[in-house]
Amino acid sequence: MSSGNGKTLNLTLEVWRQKGPKDPGKFVTYDAHGISTDMSFLEMLDVVNERLNEKGEEPIAFDHDCREGICGMCGLVINGRPHGPRGATTTCQLHMRSFKDGDTITIEPWRATAFPVLRDLVVDRSAFDRIIASGGFISVSTGNAQDANAIPVPKEAAELAMDAAACIGCGACVAACPNASAMLFVAAKVSHLGLLPQGQPERESRVTKMVAKMDAEGFGSCTNHRECEAACPKEIPVQFIARMNRDYLKASIFAGRREARAGDSA
Image (cartoon, rainbow, N blue to C red; front, side, top):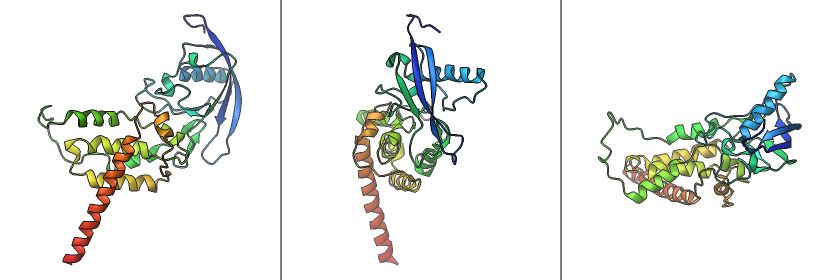
């Protein structure tokens, strides 16, 4: 298990083990010796699990899929930081050269009421799916694909929309926030569609429905700690939260006016 440059690490892992959502969890210590510095963090866990299997022990459960930094599945809190010590890096793209020989590494799942632990390092992030289902889409029937230039989009709006669309829904923002707020995630999804012409007809209903669903799922409120921005592997800025708050305020005002007019005409 030597790397191309011959460097290996001997590490101590403190891993959160939990059999199920209702079971008490605890940290369990594992030795991870001879780990190549060229391995990714998940490859290191694969090696540890292979060794546990060889000894007839239960392997560590953790989420993963693409291992290319684009799916958001690989959410781990490493030494107290979502996705580990390197900024703008997902867990699967974190390499073991970021650690030193002899290090003790603490590995935990996301910690949030809205993300219950299913097993070990795996959490249920379906709350994000339900937020998207509440309004994070455009519901018109588009038919065949339109010509790319059929709907003009201002360059600034297109670039901002693309920045927001970079969100991979990993939940690091929630795990990093002292309030377990999902505001950065929701703001990115609201802003992505709200900045484009195709998203304008449902702009008001989208933001009110998604914010309401976020609150109903048990996420905390935003108090401007900005830990979400620091933990985001795609470096999505908190300015999108301000944009969403403005949209939400406008939608609330317009809804109040419509209710008032309806009451007057009744």
